[in-house]
Amino acid sequence: MSLTDKQIRAARARYAKGGISQRALAEQLGVSQTFLFEILVGRVRPEAGGPLHTPSDRLFSKSDVVTIRRAYATRRVTQVELAERYSVDIATISRLLRGETYADVGGPISEGALTKPRSAKLEPRQLDHVLSSTDGHSDLARRYGVSRQLIQQLRRRWGWTP
Image 1: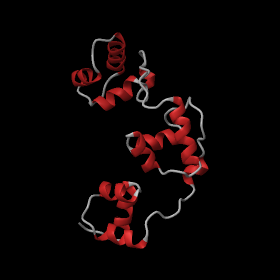
Image 2: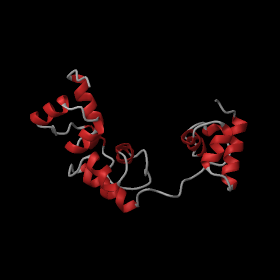
Image 3: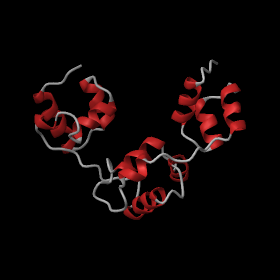
Image 4: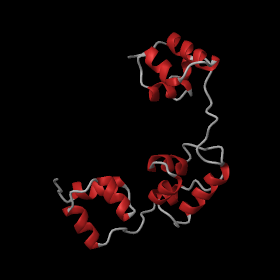
């Protein structure tokens, strides 16, 4: 469902007033809670107007953000390890490292640190196991300390079929 500017302004005003959850408001509008959040914070249709929501409950402290960014920039840890350490998904860590989130916090946001190829993490015997196993991508990624996407790409490249 596509919302009009008037509906978006009304939704933002209603949420800013309080007394309603994002889930309830999303159900009233017939949209997903995720989409409503994107509207409320102004990532979607900021030009529609109305008060924007500023989330106050952050997952990480400023010192955690700086620590995470420094550890990754110095290649002491992988994104997978950081995600496991802080009990979040890899996408959350990736957005933090790129500065998409916590842009107001310091620490290295180095494009070079994120784009330089890392050394291979899988040994030949591990690659053989990945290609012969029927285990899920996520299980194998956790076992070998690599991303689920890497497992998926390796299997696709080598013609793996379950």
